Amino acid sequence: MTNRHMSFRHSRILALGAVALSAMLFHSNASAYNFNNETCNVQLDGDILLTNTMLTITTTDNDQIELSESGNAVINGQSIDLTRAQRQDVIAYVDGFEATVPKAMALAAKAIELTNEALTEVFTGLLGEGSELPKLLNKRLNELQQKLESTVYPSPGTLVFDSRTFGSNIYNDKQETQTEFERDLDQAIEEITSSAMAEMLVLIGKSMLSGDGAMQDFETRMQTMGDNIDAAVSTQSEALEQDATALCEDLIAIDETEDKLQSITELKDLNLLNVSANRA
Image (cartoon, rainbow, N blue to C red):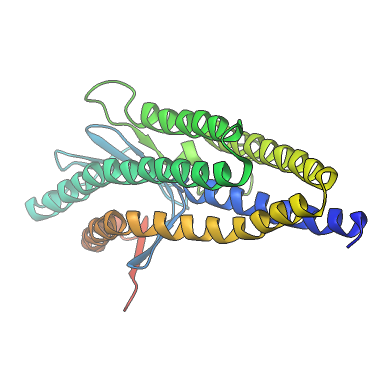
């Protein structure tokens, strides 16, 4: 095999490795739009702002609905008269989000942690113990995790979740600039991918200069990298599956409560959460 052919082949492998790396990192992001696993599929149609006492929903029609944990409901600044049973449904709906958001954030944090561990193992095996990439992975993923936690828990005992932090569901098509979280995520992916490719290219150069035996050894390691990443993703998914299933059950319960709220005339168009259970 000529050096030209080897370079072309390995450039393709590097590109595939970069794509796989980006996919794993992005998969760990807590998406504001969709959450899918083997148990359920979830779509969020609208933006939500959740504080300790209030859930504010901005619908795709730009209606603003405020629901409090005391059972009050306000739509576009107008209070809604509710029966006792309806107030209980409002309370259950708000309480459902207050209980579920921390679980979703914990799941996202766990995914980031497991991604860190999996990719560190994969790239240490490929690039060696002296590689700087695992340190960079650890640093950038820890920064993302800390940012996620500080955004949702700005102070002890305070819960704040704004779905627009991760990109608006309403104005996304018109949105010209990324959110800060999206920028941080893209920068982390770009930096880690660039570092990985740079170290791999250096190893390719050294292997080519060392002779066919070294090159063949490196080629074998490159070919197994994709398998190792697939295995890491599979292990990560299995570790998260139990928590994801529990989260699905909570979201299904919230969606059922939302169906009850739609029986209220003023809230008939409330359709924030759409959850479908996957059948075995």
